[in-house]
Structures are given as structure tokens and as C-alpha cells.
Length: 512
Ligand code: BG6
Image 1 (cartoon, helix red, strand yellow):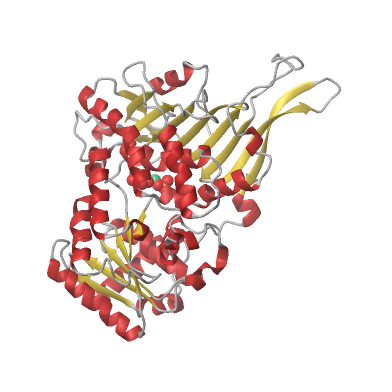
Image 2: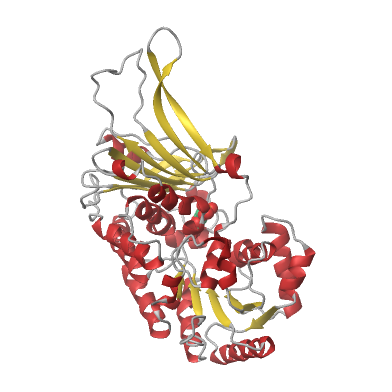
């Protein structure tokens, strides 16, 4: 049995007891993600007493810095980005086992030094130590890192042992189907699939995990969760931020690659997949792949299933915001979309005929991610829509972030002697019910990788299936250049072409 299968999803707080002595090696140690997310995640696991007793952190990067300098960088990152303040007692314990190895990513000798360094740690601990390699670098060096881990004998470390070496790969996982296949090929030439943890940090979000709990632990949803009762589904991942200083990266990426192919498709897969036979990693991932495979190829062209746009100048939070083409590092002729909307059809028994609308964009009216399930309207025999009967369709909305929660729109009688109706909203908010001390996605993901639970990571075939759907669209956009590129003012809910996409089916976008 693969190791991941022994650690079913949701096995609760006892999980840290399963984490063996571990050394986490971060490639890209002085990078932005390391400072913003990874170091704070490790630190917060320490605060919650979820790190194994023998825990070691090794930064690896091209910069020639000392162990002490790396510890200072890490402490500064915690002060700036951690959700909880730096507690010297906790940090000192982690810092005492924090070291740095300087080396190039294509430098085989440096990887031998890394192997020796891990060997020294193991000698000090006095027993086998699991190595977890976190590849948090630009994708151009993924392949040399993987190959050098293999050549230095690190990939197969303790392979026969349950606590063998593991590798976490950050996004982007390829930029189209061919490159994702190529990357999977490189990974498999060095690691076995059960050693590999492909990150999509949306899966680490509490509300995304709660989606599974809501769907499969409440009996009221399943009978309604199909084309007989559901009219359409809208998945929105809207951001208020623009490209900021990431113009160089974003120009090569765009919304479809940056957000839709991964985060939004994952939300779709969890919303629409069949109930898995159990909550272990393979069962859940099998269902996600089956669902992704049932999505019909997108119809391209002007009357097709897609819209794309760039933000133009507008207002954000009452302040003027410049357009995408004026941003730093962006070509005036850029053909990179900052917004994309898709209408997807899922060709299976459950969803035949139910449109799934996906949209994501930068510089939208506000930051909000939600999944809205719109139910069919009841027959209008009793309450036909009129001035007296202000009726809404029922909508169940999972608010992924911010202000995490769930709401249900129902129609209710307005109190009074006359029968009038009005839509009302039932609300559940995490912060109100559970308080607001929610772990960050990366805390959950680093912990899960340490204990060998792959449920919240992407399997190789899953990444490829999603790319298979998106690649023809990317190719058609590349061929069309700026033809068909719409615009939307910064601070708005998106372009007219996206509204038109829904209008064809008499639908309209929600304003969450
Ligand atoms: C990243 C994208 O994967 O997700 C960014 O590269 C985006 O462009 C970010 O801003 C959004 O993540 P979150 O967790 O803030 O919704």
C-alpha cells in the first residue's frame, strides 16, 4: 500500500505524532515565497507543537550567506509575514536546527555537499531522518534540481522505509500540456509518484477542505447535487491586486495559466466530482481526474465558451489605478489576459446540461473567491413573480475567502397580514462560530507532506488532464494575438464579453 493511503484525509490532530524526524530543505531559500509563506508556515507549526521532535530546516540557494545570516532572514520573515508574532522561545528552538547550504542548482558537487550535510544531521540525531525537498524556485531550474537530487542519491534515500525522501514542487507545473508532460517525465526519472507532492495552495485553504466535509457529511446535499435540481454553478476567484512588481512573470503567464488551470479547476473538481469510495488520497484524486476528463473540449472563437480581457485604468478602493498596459514591465502591445471566463460542460450522468461558469481576474471590484450553486426555480403555480412576490432562485454559496463561510438564499414571507415574499440569506461565518485563528494553507500542506498525506496535492495525471483542457485555448489565444481581447476598468466586475457569455443561457454573474 502506498504510504499516502495510510494517512487518510481528516485524520485530525493526532497527525503530528506520525511525523518522523525530518529535515526540510528549501530550494530558493532567499525567494519571496520562502519569506512570505514557507518560513512562517514552519514557524506556526512550531507554535502549535506540530513539528517532529527532531526537526531541521536547511535553506539552499545561490546566495553565499552564512547559517546566521539565513537565520536572521528567517526571523525577519516571521516578524513581517507570520499570522502570529515571533515567540522567541519557539523560534530559538527552530533556529538552533536551522542551517544554510550555498550552491548552484546545476552544480552536482554542491548537491554532494548537501547530501553530506544531511548525513551529518542524521548522525547527530542518531537515527534515520526523512528528507523533504521543497522546490520553491523559478520553473527553469526545476529539472536540474530534480536531476541533481537523483545523482546525489538523495531521491532514493530510505526508499524502502515509510519515511523516505519526498519532494514538493511549487507551481507553475508546466505552461501547457507538453511542458507538464515533460516535467512529469523528469520527476518520474528520479522519484516515484508516491514521493511527489505537487502544490496547489488552494487545496490547503480551510474552506476548500470544508467543501468536502459539507458535501459528504451532510445528507441534505447529495440528493440535490445534480442536474435535476441544479441550474448552474459559478466559480469566482477575484483579486483586487494588480500585477504589482510581478509583471515579468505575469506577462509570460496570464490568468488562464496563473489561476484557472490550477486553483479554479481544483475548486471545480471538488465541487462536481462523484463521492469517493473513501477519504484517502488516491480515492479522492481518482474522482477528481474522472471529473476533469468528463469536461468537454472548449468551443473556441468569437461565439465560443470563453472570454478574456485586460484591465484598463479605473478606481480601486477610491484611488485611481492604472491599466495593465501601463504597469511596470508590461509591453504596450501585450496579449496577456488578466481576466478569463469559461463556460464548461461536464458530460456525465450527474451534470449533463448544467453550465459551470469559471472566472478569475486581477484588479476586480474586490477580493473574493466563492463557489455558488444556483438551484432550479420551483414551478410558478403558487407564487408567480410579481410585485408582491419578489422571488430569488435558491443559491448556496461557499465563500472560500475572505470572510470565510457559507450562505443560502431562500425566499421568506415578509411579516404582515398580506402575503408578500422576499429573498433572505442564511449565513454561517467561520470567524463567528470558530474564532479567527485559522491556519494558513501552507501550514497544512507542509505538515501533510511531512506525514506523507498526498490528499491535498495534485497527482501527475491530474495536472496533465487540466492542461489538456486549457492548452487548445492557450494556443488559439496565442494565434489570435490581441484580436478578441476585451477590457474592463480596474475595480469593476469584469468585461462585457464575460457577461455576454452567460447571457446566451439567460444567466448573469453574481456580485459576491
Ligand atoms: C498564486 C498566483 O498562485 O495565487 C497569484 O500566482 C495570485 O497571481 C495568488 O495572486 C492568489 O492566492 P490567494 O491565496 O491570495 O488567493
